[in-house]
Length: 257
Image 1: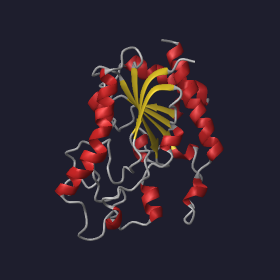
Image 2: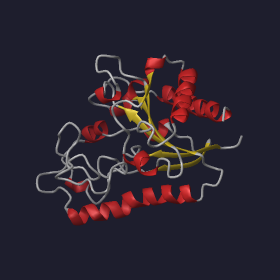
Image 3: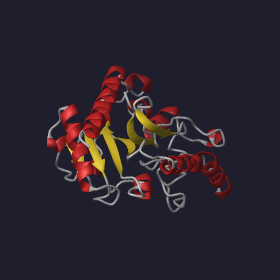
C-alpha cells in the first residue's frame, strides 16, 4: 500500500526530561506525567502508513515545540519553556527556573531541530505530501474544547483557524471521515472550537501546505486517574484500535480526493 500523503507532527508526545534541568525540578513524577500529553505518540503512531512523522521524545512541560520561541517566562509561564503547569504549579525548585542562557540552550538543542525538520520536509515534499496534520489530545473535561460550555465535550476536535490554515472544504471532509469511521454523532466531532489552533498550524498552514490540528479526547483511551500507578491508566488495546481508526479515517479522506 502506498503511504498516505501526510506530514504528521506530534509535538506533545514526549515524556523525557532534558538532562539539563532534571536536578532542578520540583514536581513529582506523577505530577510531571499528569501535566503532559502522554501516549499521543502511540495514539498517532502512523510511521508505516504516512509519508513523514515529526516528533520529539522531550516532554512539552520542559520544551514546548508548539509555542512561539519568544513566549518565555515570566511573561509567559506556560510558554515555550514553562515555569508553571497549566494548574499553576511551579515546575522548578525555588530559584532554579531556567535563565535566559539555559532557555537558549534548550531551544537550540530540542526546539529548533523540530521546526527545521518540518521546514525541510515541506520543501522536499513533491507529491509525497499534500496535507499537514498536527496531532494532539484533549484533557478530559477541557472546557476550551467545546464551543458551548453547557454541552458535552466533543471526542474529536479539528481546527484550521477558521480557514486560516486550510480550505474549509478540506476540514469539513476530514470531519465527515472521522465521524464515519469512529461512528460518532455530528456533535462529537467539533470543527474550530474556541481555540484557533496552536503555533505549528498557524506557522505552516497554507504556506504552501494546508494544515489541520486534530485532537482526540483522552477519555477515549485513559482510565480514571489512579494516584499511585500512572501506567495502569492506559487502555492498550483501546489505544491500538484508535490508532487503526485514525489510519482508516485518513485513508477514506484521501480516497475521495
